[in-house]
Image (cartoon, rainbow, N blue to C red; front, side, top):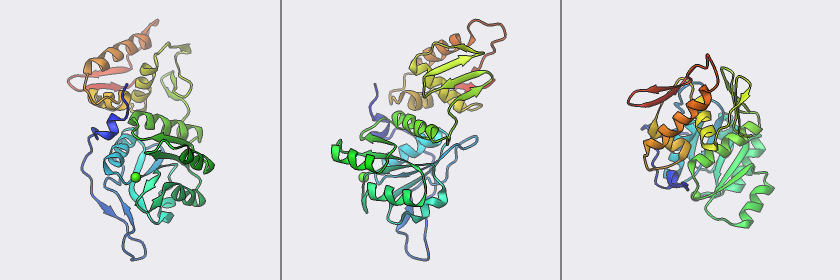
Length: 266
Ligand code: CA
C-alpha cells in the first residue's frame, strides 16, 4: 500500500494561485498566508480547515487534497500571531509540531483558547513524549510523517463528522453510505462493498455532479503516484454491478465520461 508518497513526492497538481500577505495594524507581516489561500473547491464547500505547516511541498499537497474534498482550506507557513485565525472560523486545524517560530502544541493551545476547534497534529518524530503532550492538549488525532494524504483526509473527515461539522451519512437517491461504520445500502438493502469500493463510492458521492479523472481518483482514493487506470476501471465496474444488482429501475449512478473518467449523478 501507499505510504506517504503522495505527500513526500508532491504529486498532487496545484493550480497557480496568488501569494497573499496579511498585514495587521500596519505592522509588517509576521502572519503570512501561504500561497493558495482562497479555496476554489467546486460545489458547496463543507467544513473549514487551516493548515499550519512550514514545509511547502507538504502544505501545498495537503491544501490541494483538502480542496479536492471540498473543504475550504487556508494555509499558513507559520503563525507567530494566531489571533487572526478565529476570523476564518475553522472547524479543524492541522498543525505541524515543529514550526519555525516554535512549538505547534503552544500554537494549538492558543488557537483553542480563542475558538473551539478540532486539532490534528503532524509530527516528524514518532516520539511518545510528543503524543502525550498532544493528547493532554486534547488533540483529536495524530499523524506521523511521512503520512499518506488519503489517510490524513480520512482522519480529517472522521474528526469533522464526530463534531457534526460534516454529515455523518452520505445520502443520494436512497443510496446511503456511512464511511465511519463501513456501511452502505441502496433502497434499504445493505451492499457488500470492500473497503476500497466504499471509499471510492463515498468520494464519488461527495463530488456529486463533478467529472473526476482516473488520475484524480487514484490520487484521492488510493494515494498511488503510479497511474494504473486499470485499477480504477476494475473497481468502478465492480461497484456498478453491486449498485445496480437485483432491481428493476436501479438506474445508473456512476456515469462514464468518455476520455476523462467518471461522474456520479442520479
Ligand atoms: Ca516543520
